[in-house]
Image (cartoon, rainbow, N blue to C red; front, side):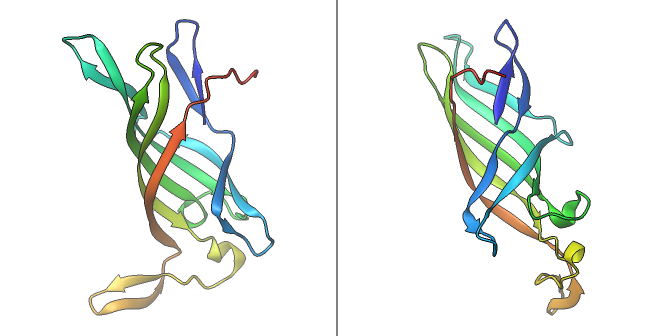
Length: 157
């Protein structure tokens, strides 16, 4: 994730360069990578919480949604074959230099398996009054934790 700033130091844009699932390997032996985009259905928040009394705002607070299209996807980008998540968390700043050191938090959303694009039968079913039904639903819930460390180096782009 890249944070772009203007000459006055204001955050102007957030882009994504390299999202890779490091805990799952596909049958080809490759890891899943993602083309990732900010989802503006909820306005992304990148701010700092602190004290009006001291004028110090040392706790980074972020909340943003992303859409991530996996490398195995062959169909159009939609809920059936993509990761739709909200990331929210707090972090720490360097109090002297005032830059963000890291942010950590929770993540929740949905992941589509892409089975319908491949002609496979999804292993996910809708829930009914008496448990699972025979109706296929290619999307399941995901949740977890995340952490980002800030690399202060200029990207050179």
